[in-house]
Image (cartoon, rainbow, N blue to C red; front, side, top):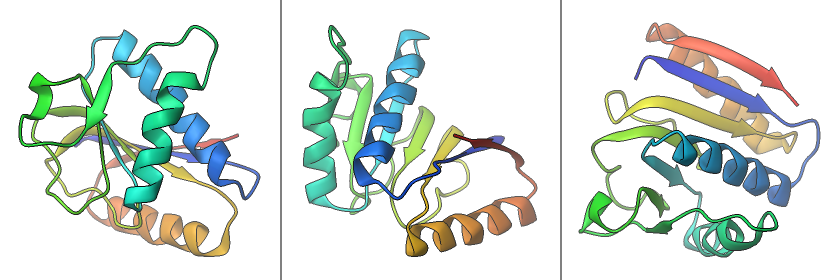
Length: 141
């Protein structure tokens, strides 16, 4: 992992975080990248799984839930962090509580909103990524 992008939303909104994750994922998939989306829970994984089919009129993002088959099933995988991150992801979109482990993704997109706990997680992750020497970019939305 060389680069971490923090996308900071101006609201406190779970659905807004998920919609941004869908948009980033679609853009990366259209560029031919493999994307892993890490959620905070099984329920959030299920919600994101459904949303990837409906977030935009006419959208199509081939995706699946994390499984032993790995990237053979789909170029986009969704998991809740109970299993190790799959090897070979070009982009990890992180909606979970923990930072992405070094070496598991070429690039990380951290989506942070104004909810107090998630905002603190973002600050803590920012500091740890910076201490580890990663290039960090912040996008305030």
